[in-house]
Amino acid sequence: MLKPSLPKHVAIIMDGNGRYAKARGLPRVAGHKAGLDVARNIARVAAERGIEVLSLFAFSSENWGRPRQEVKFLMDLFAHALKNEASDLAANDIRVRFVGEKSALPKPLQEAIVHIESDTMNNTRMQLLIMINYGGRWDISQAMRAIAQKVASGELKTDVIDESIISQHLAIGDVPDPDLIIRTSGVERLSNFYLWQSAYSEFYFSPVNWPEFTTEVFDEALSAYQKRQRRFGCIPDAETSSSCC
Image (cartoon, rainbow, N blue to C red; front, top):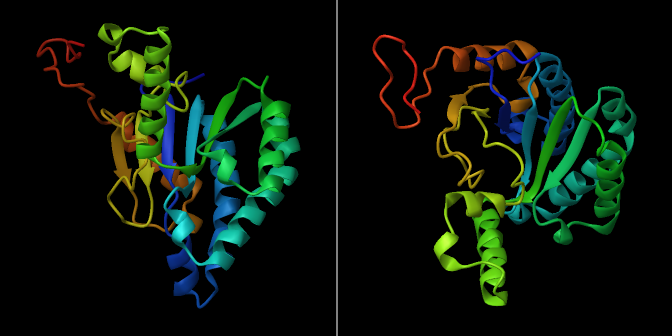
């Protein structure tokens, strides 16, 4: 069971695969391979800890600017991993959903995504959101287009559009905003990730590169979150130490 003070939704910006490989005199793709093993382990650990939703930022909409061979390797790695991980995900009762502009992905990867989403759709222990070809600005833009189309068709009136309506039209509108966002490799920025959803997220920046991100480091991030007081813009009651929101 999820402890009350633990985050329901943890999102991770998995950064530092290339730096990890370079520090060891290895090609960048070696870092991506090592990073995949860590992602597999952290997904399992998060489910064991009782986390309800885990988001992993795997490939941003800006990552297409990387060297062509590296991008191709990543796309092939994703497709291969999905075929190999399906049974383990099912055994751990984890539902997998992909978030991003999937139409731009290679056809084999699109097909693998359809299969694993279908095979795991009834799993309930944890939702694993894999952000691929995702960008926060893209997410908000596609929500605005969807809302505009409904206004144009008469399905929606402009005077009812509020934060809730916008949230519902984001790529994953049925998932709560991330309580905790973790970024590895010592970089302290969002990099176009969950721009709308991170309004009141807590942040934890780890100096370790993603391939070195262990269960212990993950637990350190959860522990740091537990020690924080989430105010959401309110002033806590001095006597009860509870938020007014």
